[in-house]
Length: 152
Image (cartoon, rainbow, N blue to C red; front, side, top):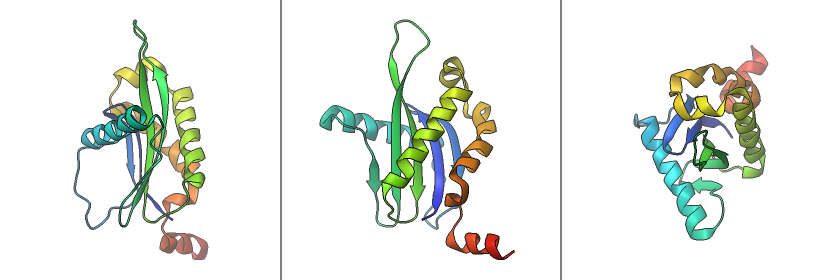
């Protein structure tokens, strides 16, 4: 399993996007458009089925999603979904990735103030990329790249 892409969204706004690999079908989709799609799926899952969206499977890829609610800093307080997701190249048990996504989101909310999460653009959060890389470790490497790391 290889993590091809990792992202953090606040509702329909992308806060962090890390692409580790591109696919041959990779279209340059706007990060906020992708965030809106994921947010809408998450809201649909909660409203219609009463549960969190965990996994979206496609033919060659899967998207594992973890969502947590955070409160706005303004009155009246509202809850908004902070969503961490990763796209992988093959089916793998989400049990491996869900705790990882939860850990990344917890560290993200510990690192950045609620005010910043709600008001800053994605450039502001780019300093968090090395921490994500450290948490994901070798899951971001393809099998070929893992062997390269072992041999060279």
